[in-house]
Image 1 (tube, rainbow, N blue to C red):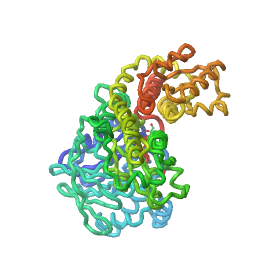
Image 2: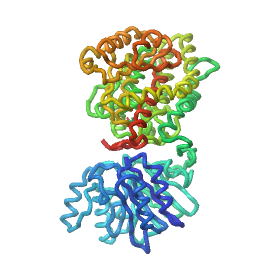
Image 3: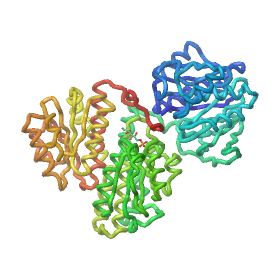
Image 4: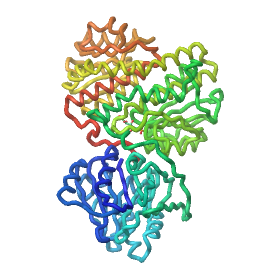
Length: 606
Ligand code: F6R
């Protein structure tokens, strides 16, 4: 979603605000802007399009000032234009906002009736005008903020700059993240610790409905009218961790981090010497769980679907999966003693968070698998089992996905052990297979030339099909999603058994069909689908191991040989080539890989 940053500073802030926006650009990139105080007056520069446009603007019209706020936008209300770019300002206040003010129409009607003139089409302007209205009634900025918060419905992280008050910023949050950074004689506010990493490592995360009064040397936090204390933590993030290194894109860098993301996550949940998993301590016993519900969105949802196969197979535990946006409104009955897992890289995705809250209202124990430990989902869960993938900046999720799969598989193994459905011998085999994974992943990353050759062919297609069975089916979905979002080529993922029930009509010589086909117990079934495509003049592309390539490779339009692994861990390995295929197809098409059109990371609105 949108990224926000603010500094109550002693030195000129604009270069640092823009640098902060660069680190937040993954949250939205359709327009951006900065506001500071010049001789007590609010001045701002805004630009439509990427941050480079704002930088160019600032090059021509520099902006001085030692206290300021900045924003990078993913439009929700009001089209993409300079007048809708934040900061949204009146002569009294400038506001940057992430989220949606749900009652903005009602507020606007009231404020217009008072004689106020709105200059933008954004929901955020209702906040700026409301604050102004209170300030004009002689309220202090603090009083105006408290009065404004009481009127707002919806989701927001806000940072407000007040005319004449170079010693002050006020921030507030509800359902959107906001962090306070502590410096030396300077204080900061930002959407996340990543934005603040080069400025400070001392961070406090605001909680629901907190608002904070920030001065040069202090942050006073309030909730429900009372002062509250929020713990200051030292983040392990550094500015260096969030660069692209020698890679052309964050996505490429992050795919190269698959082995490290997997091994860091494994280190937390495996005991290699005992050839056993070492599960986190949980507030329930798997033996007593009648049903597991797993909810997530997008790529994380595909991890959930693979998790379902694992829990059902290894622990004989009934599992339901649903995407957050459906689950939150389905009013699904949930059994007493049930467990609900939320899977999310950011831990902030609004639909997954709402699904988690629904499950809580149904008396479920909530376990979340998140990559950001300070996120809303983490805070609202009974237990978190974090992935250790490190910061993920590219909009398309990559290494967080393989790390999520590692957590799900180790949990499924421990559930199998607890429920007596998995033998110690099979557990030891699976642990061995997991320990080998980082090296196998590195081998796959090393086959990039073969993947580039296939991607160059795929890049010429208008439509692409991805087929898989069992745990390879969600990998087919992941391949199709990544290809769509990065290269804008239309792609569909299907369970291969469904081919004959409809999609086979699409088979034609210009439609590549990617088969995600490790040699597992369904290998014969996927081989039949492959033959059906081949027999109809289609273009099958085969991702398989040596046995699969020996069997079908001669009939393939192109093939990629992957290392042999235990079929149970195969989806973790096969995730990588489908992501790489999408990356290199997008590269061939020249699209904006780290910032695909219309997208943003951390979708904190519905
Ligand atoms: C696709 C992608 C998205 C996210 C989804 C959920 O490449 O990245 O589909 O997986 O928006 O995000 P998180 O995991 O942060 O809840």
